Image (cartoon, rainbow, N blue to C red; front, side, top):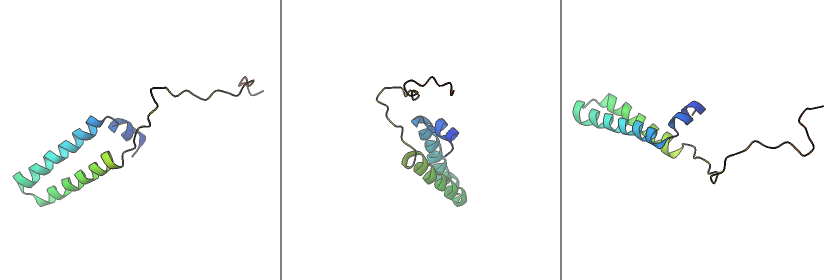
Length: 82
């Protein structure tokens, strides 16, 4: 996934909402319209979303409540480069 996609799908509720939408759509296709083509496509999208959003989605690294700070320059280095 791209970094933009990762940041947008980071909240769990968004991933659950997309998956719930696909589940409802699949039920609609299976029990109301009986359209096998769309049921297959939506089912494949549902399997892909479960795999991508819940199995392979990168986990957040716990930082123990600390903010990450940029590295400090070595002692005695003013950072001017001269």
